[in-house]
Length: 280
Length: 295
Picture 1 (cartoon, chains in turn red, blue):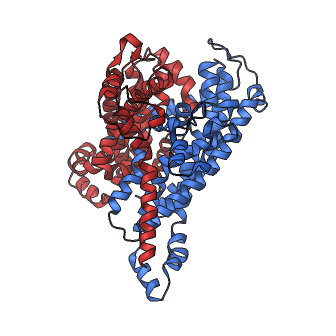
Picture 2 (cartoon, rainbow over the protein chains, first blue to last red; picture 1 turned 90 degrees about the vertical axis):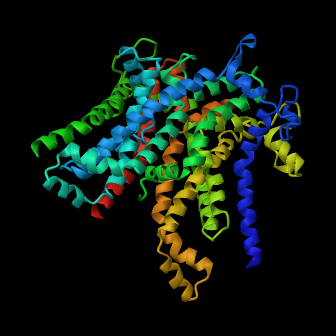
Picture 3 (cartoon, rainbow over the protein chains, first blue to last red; picture 1 turned 120 degrees about the vertical axis):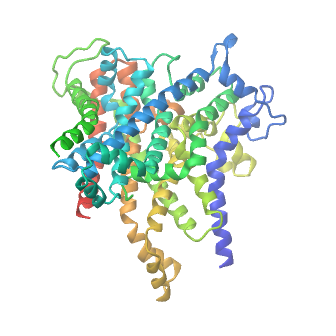
């Protein structure tokens, strides 16, 4: 019994090392100064930790033609916040109607909306670019925000539909008898109990919009408008950019969603499980 | 009452219109593009029938990318599901610091595939001029030199090397699904089995695993469809690789369409991809919604 317990913890520890290995490399490399960086010593700890790489990755280096990530980081902020809020709100509205004001085809409508979350986005990219060009939103943040709002609808609707189906229908029926109308029931009964669902949906949307790459790549070709994931890929793709700056850039890109995960992980996991369609 | 129904309709109308246009309208449009002769910056809607599809299935790069996807999906599914299940079972054994382990195993899900790609590109880089770097260097240091490999730069390995970061990123997700499933099994079931003298192995083999079958199905379908669509990770880590050894259909579509301007050919790739993903996901969606109605 004792040996199996030890073995169990050894296996668990082995996997801890596996999952943390890239984080270790990210951290030690981005904390090394320019003089110390060498691929041959990539596993060594920095002798004198410095934030030089972060500063360079953030601000860039005009003399060397290195674009910093600061502008793209802010682009991602300006993109993610409105897109998260709008898609979450739309999800709440849909979830409310699809559970508490069911009609003959409400399950069909739900399935039609839900399908949008599984499609390979490649199958909408060509028309997306054409339409964005037509309505003059191609290459702009509002165009990207709009795209994310639309493609966020399926998952937010799913999250709110799951959550609202746990509100007893009797409660709604009683309110109807008392003369409350559609909007009043939504604002007085449903919304006040919704914060957990808003947290799950908003955190999910924040994470997936921040982490998106494909839409950013296709909708915003201009480096000044690109979200940080696309800018990181460009930074890492150019061979003259030093390795430590790439790692510092990767860490900057990962930081916001990592912080959300560390502090609000509970909600994130609920979003993950909802997204698999397995139980609630 | 009548007015309520109207307001309810107005509530879901924006979503239906937006999804109707951006998902269904755009898919239809892509479908049309796949049957025309648009192979330049400027659209050309001359109908050419199935020509783009026929050319596609004669295209060397496309066929390699399909083969790669099959290999990748198989390895990725088998590894992620087994690691996820193993970790879930271990963590279910009343482990101390369970929350800590769970947080570590799941954190890669919270970061972008691009970050993963950028980091693993270096970790799985064999280096040049005989000097080991990355994982190879680590293997050398801990006396496991025989594990050294060319990873994604070796055309014989190619896409198989990309499985490692993909599993690194997604196996924790499978663990979370299994754990949630295990926690919903009533404890009386375990206790009753143990009272009857069942061993730990028997409890898992005959009680827990059969009850987890729907979760395995869900995990396989969700991971399977992610695997078919995989783009970001390959794009940022390896690109199409030497002799297209790392190529996948989504990347092929991007290159064909947005770098090569062969829009119709790219559209045909996306439609093939869409059909593949739908064959996997639509039955599962219908099944889930139906079983929910029955409840």
